[in-house]
Length: 293
Image 1 (cartoon, rainbow, N blue to C red):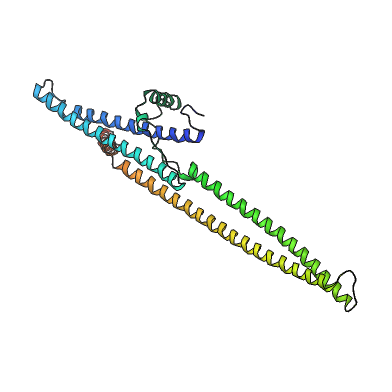
Image 2 (image 1 turned 60 degrees about the horizontal axis):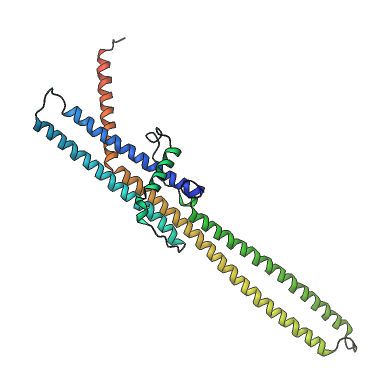
């Protein structure tokens, strides 16, 4: 077990979510830095200010920072609910009921363990340059692993049924060969009295053969029906897997769309646009003073 009390696969999922939150946190801090820099560039151009002017600037900065933090906290809450919804959806597909202990969210000891785990697993400088992680597809999670195990189990049962059916066919064929041999023997004897086999014995043999053939047909029909049910279950499982993949793609697109709608993304986009415009202006200015050939 890992430091979080999880297996290796689930620990990796937790690490991916921690990395995603660290990336979001670094982007929000950049947004706050941008708010302060905007204040410096747009308002701090005089040597002295009155108390009212300083108060006005601080109030404006507070309003912008408060809006940024409120937007980020709201987005973080919704992102956590979205992740929890994915876990609950996977549990419901397997008829499981998951309970969440909300009081554990304020357990300082567990929070410190997670903080230590984050510091140990992630580098201090790697979060700012890390690319925006994507949610792992469900075909790599436990839900699909269980589905794959169920498909393999059904295939194993189908193979066992086929082997039993083949063995029963061989037994019936052996009985039919024995019957044909007896019929040939009776035919060759003709009207001769036979001391070792009378008409009652032949009738009994024919009755036994009819009974064996009837039982074989019943068992064969039963196995064919079971095989058909297994094939239907296998097809249904494959369709469920395709639906899960489709839901994953929709969830990824929705998450990417919500990220692009956040204030941090817009601020970063505006800042990049401003920087690009400044670079273009500098290039034009430099080009004016460069000597012509």
